[in-house]
Length: 118
Ligand SMILES: [Zn+2]
View (cartoon, rainbow, N blue to C red):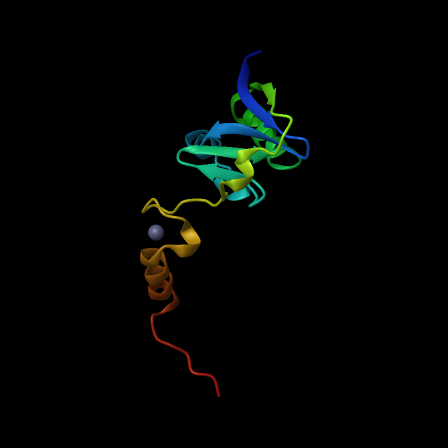
């Protein structure tokens, strides 16, 4: 049985597990992570209640790996809380919801024309 070890950061209120974004992609769970998690650069900090469980389940199902965490407790408010809320990135590499290219593509797929209400 293989074990994957990830770093876990906690403060007095909550905890997050640091994973590379590429791991979320490899597991196919980019869409399943909530906005209670945070992101910074290529790292994603999964919140402990739900998203770590989602990750652990996928890791087990897809690769048969057990998840282990190695923790650091800061004892005071973590700076992770000041990071950007997690969101999946589009194929342009931007936050999907705010990407202008994607908005344009969505409109195009919808048929392009504007609908006028009465
Ligand atoms: Zn885009």
